[in-house]
Amino acid sequence: MRDIPEAFAAHLAQGETTTAKCWLVRRTDGVVLGFTDHDRPLIVEETQCHPAYGLDGGEVPSRLGLQVETGEVLGVLNSAAIAEDDILLGRYDAAKVETWMVNWAEPSQRLRLRVDTIGEIVREDRVFRAELRSPQQALNVTRGRLFQGLCDATVGDARCGIDLETARHRADTVVAEVIDDFQIRVSGLGGFEENWFAFGMAQWNGGKRIGLRDAVLTHRRDAAGDMIGFRDRVGAWCGVGDALTMTVGCDRRFATCKAKFANAANFRGFPHIPGSDYVLRHPRAGYAMDGRPVVP
Image 1 (cartoon, one colour):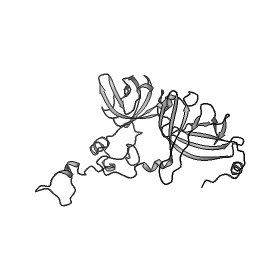
Image 2 (cartoon, one colour):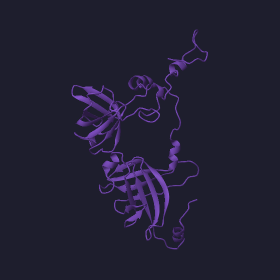
Image 3 (cartoon, one colour):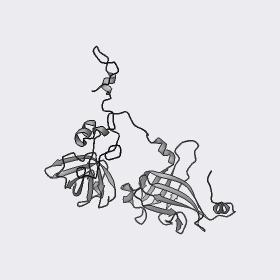
Image 4 (tube, one colour):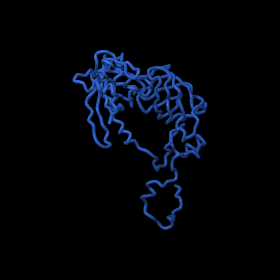
């Protein structure tokens, strides 16, 4: 049961009310935007909610149990509030949306109705539709560890133990050429081996992508320099001279952990588990089937 503030509850109990909906959008990069369906700005949680370029929230059904409740908000793309480039760049991915009921005559009287996470965003005719997912979606996230040959740690995290701040594991570079949507050529990586930054990360320090991080898939080298291939499209939102910081990558194999990082003691996989070829083959005379570890 919701705990409604006494003054607001008294207002709602009247025959006539002066309520409006407000939405606070909290992006993962720390930016907070406020919108309202009222015709003048309202202050909610120290954030000004603007009536212009706002959102139109649909109904969200309430379900019993642990089902994920979904709804949507509809809004107009406008550079003064929500820009199309920011959506395309993923700045609204996984953003939190707080829905408030506010007494517009006395904004201090308000009630937070729900907190959702933005899921899929569809853009059409200068309008966007954002799917809102309730907190129950967290129950769909895999928890615990998987019994697999590859490491399940992220290079540089506490379980991995590699220090990404050392000069051996990071490099500042700039874009020298945009090859296509997924590949760029960079300068300044001549002191590193080819493929050193494959499966690593790139932190953008300039240009339209400033503040964003992108997963790196490939790091190749030819006579013209180093080429970086990304998992997602970046070419349309970066340009020559944009600065970025590369951090070392790992393909999560035991051999790489041992040879590249000398970090075998922290390997978080199970490299010696038998593969499907071993599990499916027929037993033969001479096979060791006495419970001892099987090392391929």
